[in-house]
Amino acid sequence: MLVKTFGSAVYGVEAITITIEVNVSEGSFFAVVGLPDVAVKESAQRIDSAIKTNGYRMPRSKVVVNLAPADIKKSGSAFDLPIAMGLLGASEQLELIDALKDYIMMGELSLDGTIQPIKGALPIAITARKEGFKGLIVPKQNAREAAMVNSLEVYGVSHINEVIEFFQSGKNLQPVVVDTRDEFFSSQYSFDFDFSDVKGQENIKRALEIAAAGGHNAILIGPPCAGKTMLAKRLPTILPPLTLHEALETTKIHSVAGKLPDNATLISKRPFRSPHHTVSDAALVGGGSVPQPGEISLAHNGVLFLDELPEFKRTALEVMRQPMEERRVTISRAKVALDFPASFMLVASMNPCPCGYYNHPIKPCTCPPGAVQKYLNKISGPLLDRIDLHVEVTPVPFNELSSSKNGESSENIRERVITAREIQAERYKESAGVYCNAQMNSKQLKEICVLDNISANLLKIAMNKLNLSARAYDRILKVSRTIADLAASETIKAEHVAEAIQYRSLDREGWAG
Image 1 (cartoon, helix red, strand yellow):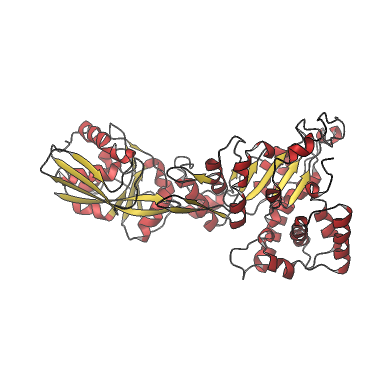
Image 2 (cartoon, helix red, strand yellow; image 1 turned 120 degrees about the vertical axis):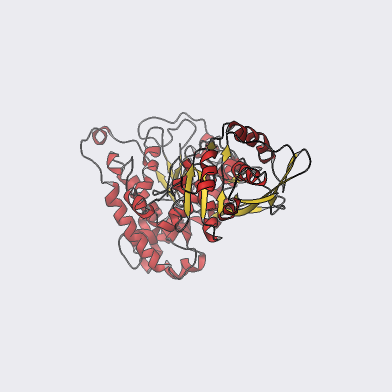
């Protein structure tokens, strides 16, 4: 007897419906065809134990399972559940098998029939609704994640018996209902950190406010314990809140990577990813034998923080250059090429030298001659070219550190950032893919960042006096435009340019002695 059930395979951040055909006929072997990987082939052993443990039998005949379309590779253990249900139907142990065609099922089976969580429940649910399925059956831990998709009945199950009883009687499962909007908006502004906790460092707060307002990449340079990591962790608290569309994009990526906690719904806050400097190239940008999103994709619509930037492998940093420009990364394999979104703000931190105390106001630098420049040379010029703000961080004096006065709150800073972003949204509404000043192209730069004579002369003097590199020119203009937006100024003024110039520390000739 031939029975069809339906599952789904995730490729990139999208899902493809897979038809699972199970045929039981005369013979004595079990075969899975349709480009299954080892985990899919091993499903026979898990299914055998799961159904026998719960009072059913494994057919002692020829069983062929076809995963169609057969030219797409199938990977993972989540096909256990639809294969098991198809097997029970084909061996006539399950009645009402016609109902199987209305549902997509996914779940890994334990040997006792317990259903384990899967990756990619959200894109699977989106595809199920798009293709007109009545419902989706997933592990209970993934049910709330999948239930974010409207107009689709989502059932969370914890054991194969629940699925069998559902198809036998249709009365024992209740669809999971999630008020997506209510949960999303209620937790948008709940943060563990706040800028009001930071003592002093007003110039660094200002730099991060500019970075947030224009979507600029930034690097913090300073000695150990100056507060670089503490400040970077608070950057997401002043970024504009995620829109529902951005939240859905971000949640899909984390769902595919298996990074969502159990019973999670939409990600409501911008992600903050901080990989260790030993991270591999594939872990940073994505890849693997079964391509998975990397850290730059997990930071999509949020912040990627690289602490101790010179300690990262040079190859890992260099592979980020193209994704930083294109805001997506393409992982190519022999038979498939997958795109992962990667629109993130890069924030990096570093010591100014190996000992950490170059330019320190009190402690002397103990590095030998040339060590500072050698240390900075670990970061390539093309990568620095993509970082708009170079911010020098100095230690907080004792009188500020011991003060009981709180700094300005993240909420107040965030309001100014949102206002500046609204100005930019209006400015770039006709430009596809451009949402903030950092994303301006050369043509837009000439049209939007027009300087008056005083500002142009100031920039000319700065370029000559400070020996700024040519690549600093465009960055200064973009940052100046953001500073003007924060000041609600239609034109770029001299004071805006002057402030932008000071954020190019690493471009100054002789900065490292």
